[in-house]
Length: 124
Image 1 (cartoon, rainbow, N blue to C red):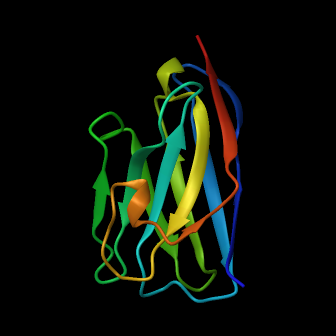
Image 2: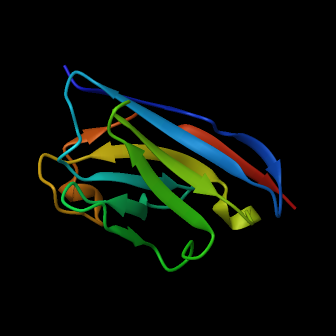
């Protein structure tokens, strides 16, 4: 059974940094796409970042480009999201997600597996 477990969320002041981790178990995801989505209160779940299972290419939402970095450690079956220069509008529950294909998805409908999420709160 596939499980994705996020960690690293918390409370941080605006301008600060956090690193989220997502450990996958039940399957090796080295050749598959891994993604991060987020959902703020009262809003729909939105794409944040993704990394392919082909050549490690990445894709980011415009709102986080230049501030967030996604990476993966295939030896640990783990994906990371380094978040710098955080803003209050980054406050949300962040979800790790995985696909059954190497190709990136930027909509929730393209996701096969979800973690339970980790809360990130950025104070002003």
